[in-house]
Image (cartoon, protein in one colour):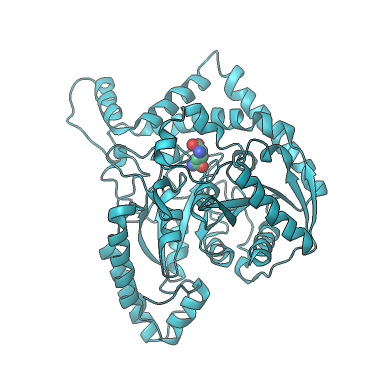
Length: 478
Ligand code: GLN
């Protein structure tokens, strides 16, 4: 295996004929299979399919006909994104045996640029978690490559873990509802890019909460993550919430630090000292390189973000999960009793504990008599929280906060947290997600031996600014 190349370097070597896609893919799959025994970053490694793609790519390269931006690149995909013919379960037993008949739009776009899909990565069941500890019944928890007793973060834990672990060019297609790209990127020391809501098609995504879900990228560097995001973004007629905007040339941007950066003071409070220190040091460096760095408060988001998010997300997810009842997708049981008895049997054994908790919470929030008090009030709060962000962007180009209040905890520590304490860990990531704003998590140092991520947020559709700022962070910290 060669030294880790950037995606652009890798693709250039492939095009020059210095790397055989087939041989490389074989080595990559071998490494993935070996590491999976300990780290469990994959729910499925798609060996047969990946080798077939590699052979096809190789044949095209020989005739000089392939020009893709991701030519021959091994790409992993979060389990909740449909890949044709590969079991796609969103980390849940209830989707056991579900083989999509089509590729999600993002998969089609990645394949069209020559990407080799190597497997489906581990996640919290349907995305319900912050530590990839809430995996479905019968699944393994992915392990942090820097310390296997610790979490990779969630819910896109396997995507971040394998990106950090792999010793070859690799990036992952991940998904965030309330921080599931930024959080694991921060815990594993890699870069996570979450686009504006609607920038990337959700067609073929197994929904968590439709008004919040966004597909994005995780890479070893800002450039790698930006390149993958560039490939998968753009309008899609198959997704009614897809924005008309063209895909952006994100991977050719250069760093720039002439930005006005608003430091979200409320989000620093309550963070571990080491996390605060690393984030402030990074912002000091940005300032030395010409950025204007000032403090700003978002009191509404700090106070109501978590509550609004968990009401809206559980309400939407409980509706989405209604379709899994052992009739259409995935798990089927022996048909016995009446339909209610049958559905209860399948759902009781198919869903894990956290999924059941969210079904109860969300159904309650939507119930007649409670709807006005909870769900509708949360929707009104959401509008106010977006307004607060919009006012902040009149003064600032980018907002900054620690991605997570702590560095990656051990599974033992996580086991001691109540569900409410776990939800509270999303304080810094949830607001930007509620507002549908593009954001990046960039590694800025470590707290103890585990990495710390700084999160930058830009206004809607300002991905170019976001990527330039993220590139600047990376550059000034080198
Ligand atoms: N931790 C959050 C939750 O449990 C976010 C998860 C996500 O973005 N999928 O809902």
